[in-house]
Amino acid sequence: MHETDGFRPRFETPEGPAPDVLLQEHDGLLRVLPTGTPFGMPRRWRRPPAVRLARGEWVRWQINHRFANPCDGSWTYRLDTLNIAHARGHDPLPAGLFLDPPPHYVDERAALR
Image 1 (cartoon, rainbow, N blue to C red):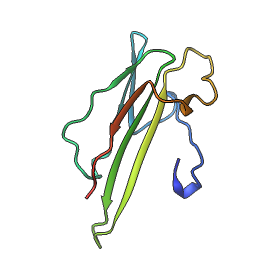
Image 2 (spheres, rainbow, N blue to C red; image 1 turned 90 degrees about the vertical axis):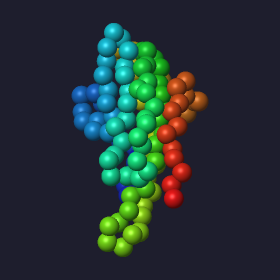
Image 3 (cartoon, rainbow, N blue to C red; image 1 turned 135 degrees about the vertical axis):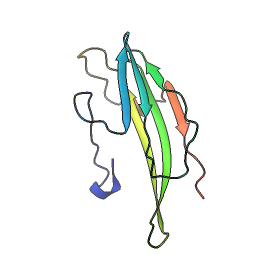
Image 4 (cartoon, rainbow, N blue to C red; image 1 turned 120 degrees about the horizontal axis):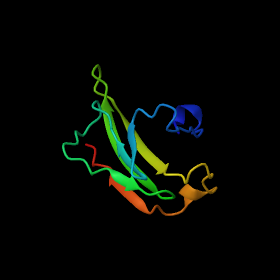
């Protein structure tokens, strides 16, 4: 969701583009690894490992960034909260799935100066 469009939810599927997340399925497990951005600060030299999800599992991954304006030094803040589930075949995921505490949680938020 983005503030600029009133936090309207948007959805990505494996068939569509997901430029900020690497998704790979192997042996029934979905490997999830957000790629982040090379332009945000702070630089993250060490990242958490990818999460592997069995069917029916999901992960919440949070990562934040600070972007500086090269002209005047002002900066903006971005917090990405990704909720990614590995569905069971064509079965729909339960409504409200992401309202429960996540079974896998990666907190990659950093102190931004």
